[in-house]
Image 1 (cartoon, one colour):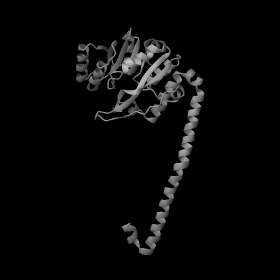
Image 2 (image 1 turned 120 degrees about the vertical axis):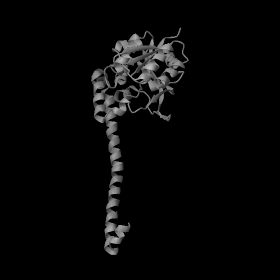
Image 3 (image 1 turned 45 degrees about the vertical axis):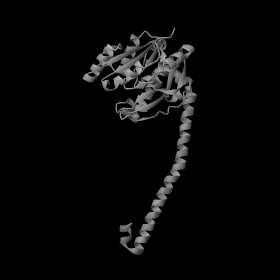
Image 4 (image 1 turned 90 degrees about the horizontal axis):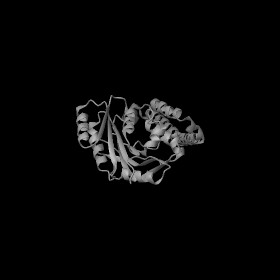
Length: 284
């Protein structure tokens, strides 16, 4: 008997995109899938109409006052009774085999906690491009998140970890919490997830200082995990500094050459002007 899967989708005024997400879920080739959409206080008519249509198609639509994406995810998962959860944002899409392949991996390995896949990105014009995420390693994940948001995990692990944390980088915090339970991670090396780039994406809205504070929130939420892997953090810092020194040495010399060439050109122009008069500088 196959394990049950619930796909949880937060939605706040995403009606123009939600139809694509709904269609990609309906195309899944896995037999035991439910789709839960959490309406996070939507007000736009088109979104309300799409949500009503989704209800008629058998999608479970939960409604809450606008509380943010983290609260919406947790509300949807709390309502689910499935063995496994797949998080899918309202403006993204998944390939028909994603649920089946991810669930099979979780079924086969009781120690496995997170299953994700290769992904690409696209925009409203229909243009697609590669999303070059590095392969997963614990050392890599400790210093920067290499796992996208569309991941399948065990509902029991979500419960044990206390749910998605109230952080700006909530998915990163969630993955670290599950890894902190001793679970392993695997990636399906096929593109099964399509991430839509929109101006409203959180990474577009973050300034550099916002990013610093968001990462600090994650680090503070998992002090023991980061302390246990402090060597990885130090190694990453040293590699970054070495790379910066190399670039400064290499391209700093190029910059010096450019400035030197510009200075020489000015001297040539001045010499030519003294020989041929102001017409030289005006014509050149």
